[in-house]
Length: 405
Image 1 (tube, rainbow, N blue to C red):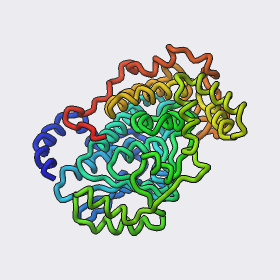
Image 2: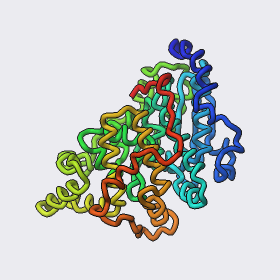
Image 3: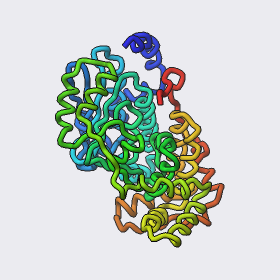
Image 4: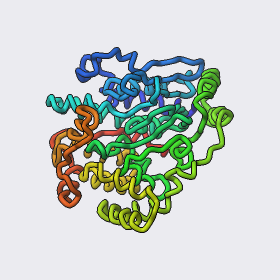
């Protein structure tokens, strides 16, 4: 709390001048697709004596994120951080999902209509909130119950406490939509044990709550049936002390062990194959293992890789590898360039084709361009890591908000 008071004067001056302030503009300036829903309904706020809860509330689309939704989260979190009467913040989702990530169908429609600036604004707003979450001064509790994909992980995993349940399903399926794991994914996936991050990013395979605990993506595990008790207990707490919050979460926790069939039992094989330098070498290693083994895991992993966009696989592998040696802000800046270059079709229209095949027409038969790894040139990959045309760079307040993670 003393740290908050010491920074209050600097923060007040900073918010008048920095780029976070444009998240507070009038709602009429937000993209058109966001105006069809009541903004206060997209993110519901519950006030408690010493805390606040933000509830993602678009259950019909698995709480998929829009620009207006993330902008509201940013405004709320900034105001709560400055309010000395609020000790900690909680986030949860409505319905059967925590958050399925970006509303990619909305982005697909926007870009097809030529609204590139609205797409850019979405990524800018999302990545700035991820950075805010990763530098937040107050304890944060994310109740990750249900489906959590893509950007849904980005808005929650940088926080202090991550509670998973027996209903949690985590994945990064972006490569199967011609995109890449973003919103900070290249930061936290690259820091998982061994080369598990490369495996998850390139295959889009799922983890359950127990597996997230074991590999370090989550901090606490609880049965879904106990969540109401956790929320009730947290709601009554009068504290800003992380150790007190941690003790309360631990009181409802369960000891967990991964199933013998868990992908975590394959870490040695994952390291042997996914620790190689190129996607081609990874595929070759998996094929050799599959030929010399009766383990169906190798075959199923090969199938997942071959369903993905070849260009996205190469872009994603490079992004994760670079993320190992970069800070959160550097990862977000790189991901911002990759995302915008994908939207701009600088090297390929794979994002549009992937969304069309999986979410629009739902024929699940994308025609990737290029169609094979051999046809993906180094120039194509390099293009995604370059400055996207004349669009502005992502500006993050690194001088005043240094990441804790």
